[in-house]
Image (cartoon, rainbow, N blue to C red):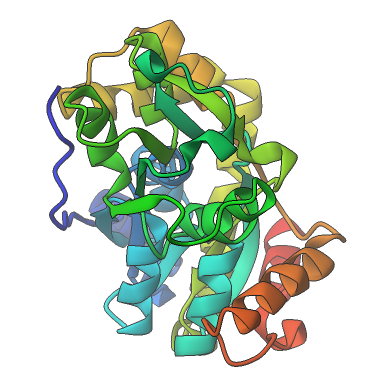
Length: 330
């Protein structure tokens, strides 16, 4: 199996010049002229694939938004890039967002998707393990510092009676875990689609538990506060494109799956299209602001405060910028 390239990738996409010329000829200012280029971060696991589709769909260009893309293995790395102001926008789950808000004042402009069905704790099939508590004394691959990593350590393992030290946590990027399982350098892994679907299809691993029963795992699109303050029109146009992405996920799933499947096959992953489609179906794209987000995020933030990962529970009136999505959907 070829390991997914972990380096930073960057692509600068310009809105069509011909459209601008046409608009100018008609005496109309092209929409893109007033909009800022978005430096878009995303993770190359399944959580980031709706964003990858956004970037490949042409919908940003349709709304006059230019972008540069920055791909990394997991969302917590995008969050760190944003705290360092290297990236303007990026997706990650609640715990990473709370940390990003604490460390860098990052704000959420929408809840983009639910991914709780995509994350699993898996063990090597040959070990005959069926429960999380059986991981005691074993090597567990975990993307330390990620939302899944935090939820596994703070909730799933704890509920199974395992505390830090009861198992050997092996720090590893999600895209390296299947190879590690195959090489038998780890006994179990905490990872997300499509890597768990690959491991399952190849007969390498079995599922001990998925995250959905613990956490629906809403994923946020976050932005730096400077970007939203200086470029509100860009944020609204950007979210208009996201609303169309959600429509494609619902009404044209094969079109979406073909675009994203091509990404993984181009990186050398061997996966049957039907296996991939099943993995992608576990992602629920529905941009919005569900009413249960504040209590959900408060609960997670209290855990992070207790673990001394953030100083205090955020003020959600400041951390959640709900106004932009309302304007985009108007």
